[in-house]
Image (cartoon, rainbow, N blue to C red; front, top):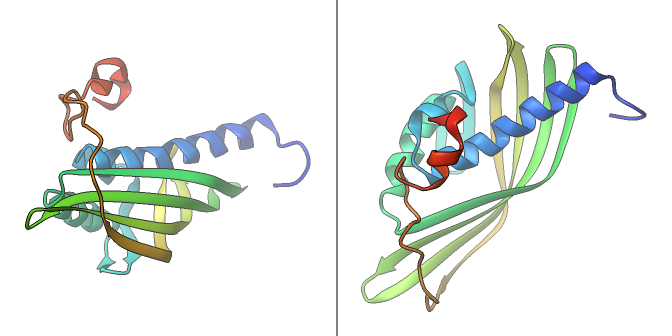
Length: 167
C-alpha cells in the first residue's frame, strides 16, 4: 500500500489485522468458535504439521495445545495489501509453548510468518489460504519465574469480561 489509502481501505486493513489477532487469541484461549471465524468455509491451511481446511486446523491445534501448560502467540510486522474484496498479508509470529517433560519444564519457541490470502464475503474478511512458514525454532529447558493464576485458556480468562464482542 503506497501513498495515502482511502478510508475504506483503512477500514479493511484494520478488519484484517483484527482477524490476525483473533487467530492468536483463539489458539491461546482455546476458543474454537473464534478461530473458525478467522477462516472462510473451504479455506486451506498449510502448516509444517498439518495440511487441510482452516477450520480443521483450528480444531487440531486447539486439541494439541491441551498438551501444553501455557502458550502465547504474538504477531508483529503485519503487512497487508488490499485490492477490492481480496487481500494478501504477511505477519511475523513468535509462539512460545510450555510443557512438562518428566520433571523438566520445556519451552518450545517458534519464529514464523503467516502468509495469508483473504477475501471479503458478505462484509466479512476471512482467510482463504494460510501458509505458515517457520523460519527457525528451538527447544530449551527453562525455570519458571511464576504464573498469574488469573490466566486461563478458556472464557474464564479475565479478558472475556471486558472484550464483550468475542464472547
